[in-house]
Length: 87
Image 1 (cartoon, rainbow, N blue to C red):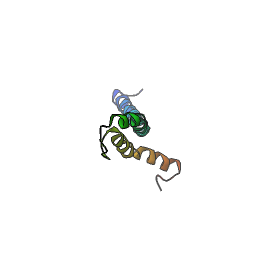
Image 2 (image 1 turned 180 degrees about the horizontal axis):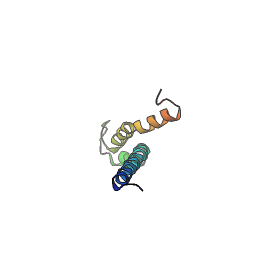
Image 3 (image 1 turned 120 degrees about the vertical axis):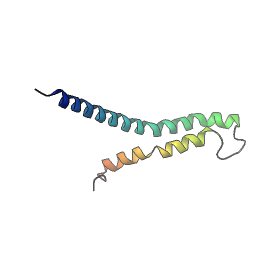
Image 4 (image 1 turned 135 degrees about the vertical axis):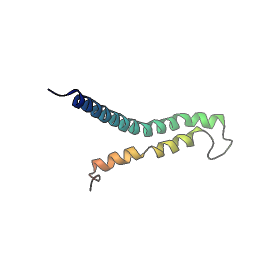
């Protein structure tokens, strides 16, 4: 019979593992989501002329930057697949 304390610790540990797993998948979802948003918003951004020729105006550069900043999760996953983690 397990004690209530050890059952609670096990449940907490399982919750932490589940939260880490979910956070990892959310990190992987961010990069393609922002890249798709940049592609879909591109024609509207050009047609609206909101930037009036400014290189960093509009939503497309923001989505591309956010995609680049969130690419670390993908780089980690690729490193794990290639066996680069833990060497």
